[in-house]
Image (cartoon, rainbow, N blue to C red):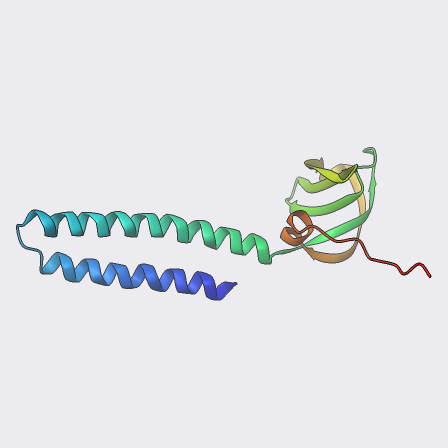
Length: 142
């Protein structure tokens, strides 16, 4: 997926080079000014899309710890819990409560002084866990 972001950056760089060449060779005609304006607008949109794409790719590739046990005074959080953020004062968890076929996702922040122990089982790619539908395993009934 990082290749996709690299290609997007390369396209922006090539369009910027074309813009510089067009700017240097621009005459006073309306057609050339419209071309440069459209090219400048396209590069601006590409920069915004590239930044968004980079953010989505970083989220898609990031792994976060899945928590199985929290030693805290707070009530049980939910069915699936991932630690998203850890600061000097707080922990932030993404909590999924299974309600029927779908899940309810919430962010829960717990002060660090209320936490005694956190047990992590594995690291999950959070994008895949949240947005990829899992097919149930088929069992043979013979």
